Length: 443
Ligand code: CMC
Image (tube, rainbow, N blue to C red):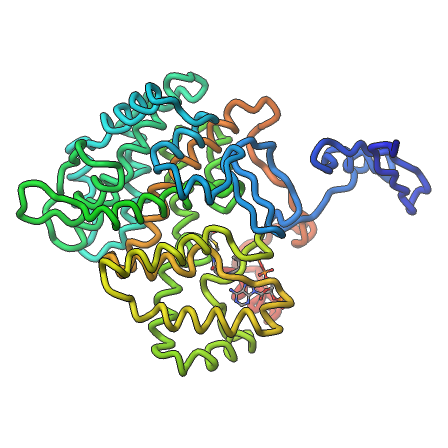
């Protein structure tokens, strides 16, 4: 049988090293450090900006096979969960590792619902934002502020405390998100209705007007719940990495979640669904699609909602989202942007530029079209991503906290700046033009 090692010859010294290959076809970066020219040498480092080929953890939560277009939570295929499960059950699976039985599901549901209310001062805190504040900015700030309401969350090594903060965050996220929306519309805050489902209550907190009780449309409620399932976790993406990295300093989970929400806000991550709609609106008509494709191929633009670091095949979530779109349109009427999106997809999937680079629609390509049809303003799209992703973030965080191999996240760097130079008093400094150029390049 082949030996599970890698033999490396350092041609600088002629020395050979045998590096163990561990389970999952990985080598430890710490073993590379043993490769040295002299005993005082720091040793070799691997350079991997953006972690494109570096595993930062071992995880049991989510499996992705990017070449095959496979996504599983705790071993369960995303297609089956989207078809048969509901968001709260999937959140339980992600957080706890197994599907619940009836008794445990009821208790979990009750426990989450118990935490849907927010402290009245959180409401007041939110009123301090400017009238036109982006709801994602409001979410970042408010989730961070929650750490001051729950100082017990600092006990991150206490299992009961971790469980409590997880229930609180999953329970309160829709309430804060809905409050951010109502605030931006100048509408009064709506208290949670715990008789409704997780998604149904969220819709009520968003859209309830003068009626005594809001009744969500069951098709829209189910569509939103499935979208929540699809967005619940996605292994080591930018926001999960932010959650783990910030959490590795042993800060409380509210502060770490605020960092994760901030990461999600960016247009290359959760902000992409908003950018897709802006792009489709800019294209305006099916006849202008070819022009946009030309701009993308010319490097002038990115095709938002396309491409993925891991998927080099159709994102399995995008397939499900595309199907849901038509179910939603049965209730809301067709969003005309779907025709532009379909044409964009059709041309892109046949075009050499996209084929060669393995660029396929990702989850964000069609989700914004559904959200828009359901009446959400574009600024709420990334918020609709943050709500369900909270269960994923908490599972990733808890796994990191319990992992004895994890320490404070602290990458190395390759210093490429000036060598040592003496300080000179300000009046004695000459201003060579090359220095001015260097200064103007910074920030
Ligand atoms: N449009 C046009 N070209 C693209 C795109 C795109 N959307 N994405 C990648 N490329 C090109 C890229 O220019 C590069 O070309 P070349 O080899 O000639 O330099 C090649 O494809 C490889 O791309 P990359 O930039 O090395 O890929 P990455 O893994 O660093 O980036 C990504 C992944 C998702 C950030 C990127 O595909 C992108 O910016 N997509 C648009 C934004 C988007 O839809 N984001 C949502 C991601 S899914 C949900 C989530 O995680 O939040």
